[in-house]
Length: 398
Image (cartoon, rainbow, N blue to C red; front, top):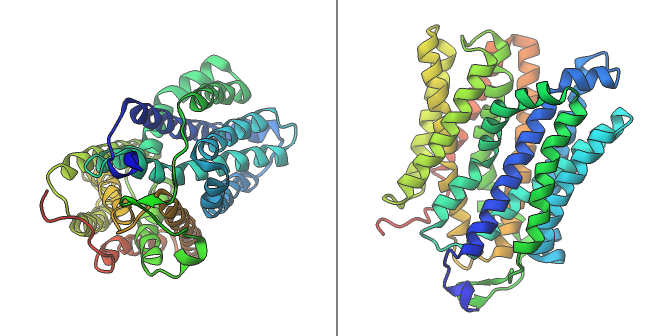
């Protein structure tokens, strides 16, 4: 198939990327808005303990894992246009269900549906990239996709507060962001396309299923490498601010990490134009992340801690582009095979992160915040360790 062999960024490809990027970014905005509005939501549903509100976090984690596992099967049955459209529809439908839920369990179900749609979406970025964009353009597009949630986070920091003040109630506020997602959903059927899932390298490839993926060593190494970084990132945003160990307040820490993530993604785009190896970027960014995290733990200087938090944000997002390029650059890769690999990647990553986060919580209960944070710091080394186990798929020179 000619357009499979010769990849080129067309105007349609750019529009598709634009719509998918902002669909996921506003998924993040809506999700963060819901978190920001937790006190109002608890009051509305007459929740007395904050522990009750944690069901929302558990729902999104479960939705991510299930959605990631099922993403490839849904894509194979519905094909790209309908599968991606389903992801968008679930994001909007989940938002609407949560807004109009008369009972808390329906609200949680709405957030689960929304999270399921987001989980499908994050997997479908990869087959779209490998189909529509040439190899030299993929690093930039991967970097953009990788920072979509952070861009949503920055948008949320800027507009969620004013929107809440303007619209008063949590339902109207969340509805405002759901409308934006609905507009993007309406655009998708107009610009979306189906494409062959099993064509790659100029020839048809055999179908590739979850059983095939589970047998391959690299499909375990990829989530192992990422899981420690993911765990540390979540700990940075949720436990660092309340630990009393760091001198940065929660809002400042979130802003620094989010902005650092955007800068890291921009650096990844620039680096990809002049450097074509994958493992050194993963290795040294992973090591730097652990060192900057250690600096945040041991310093009492606010400026040093702020700089370390920003640099940690950079180091979290800078190497992710190189990591997701590895499966894209494997011989005989197709959109269908890549979807299976990335679905497994995200699912296993979140399973490991969930177990690790629970273990860190137990350590904090038994030994205090410092012990838990050092465990998270040690886990962040999986990026560094993984760089010695993964294959190098990049070229020494262009």
